[in-house]
Image (tube, rainbow, N blue to C red; front, side, top):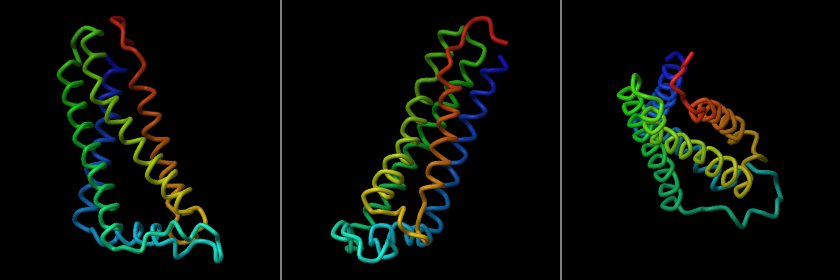
Length: 165
């Protein structure tokens, strides 16, 4: 039971994190929009780099990109909370039932890790050369979130058995 509770609490912590991220990005839209704006504009990358043709100057495209990130975060938040509820409902059930109840959490954490890996590390970091910026570089934060969620994911996917510690 202890391991099951640990899984539920850690997934709930990820759900809470995404809830606050979505709250912050919608109630203080402009602050994080500036981050996306500068990353897509590539205006703080190394002078004279040959990747500047990738920059997106359209405010509409930048807004769509940012809204897409918020949408991705929202989907992750919803799936994660659903996963928490399903695991709580199956907490005292047989191992097979609890393992089945973890499916939404597995999907949610995967979607959450993909956000940080694909949108921030790959697209932002490599395509838009965010790593070159001393001001608008979110790769460390993205890696930190990818790793934290990944650790929760690894614990979550450990199979539950009837004999729980």
